[in-house]
Image (tube, rainbow, N blue to C red; front, side, top):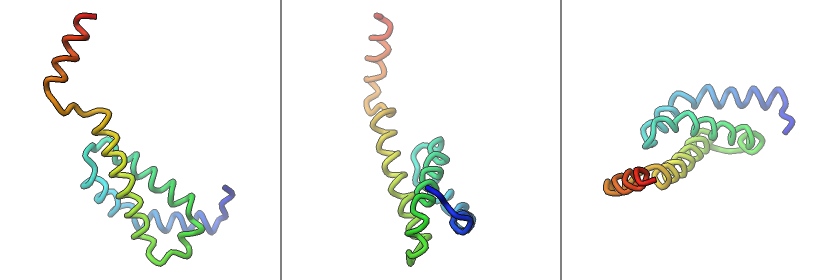
Length: 101
């Protein structure tokens, strides 16, 4: 992944024009505020990986926002599946089980 100075400048332009609005967008859509920075980082890694294709893209901001939307949905899904307790009785069962051990 040998990026040129032009690539880096183009990336900075995308970043500077989308970051503030994208942060608001992700913060609004994300169910866990601790994930916002992780999502933004993932989005801009994708931007950097696809910098050549983005030069030809007709709607760069749309691509960035759609990427953020997809990553937010994915991480929200993982977060809820892995870390959320859907039944309060599950917590009591876990506490009782841990107390027995």
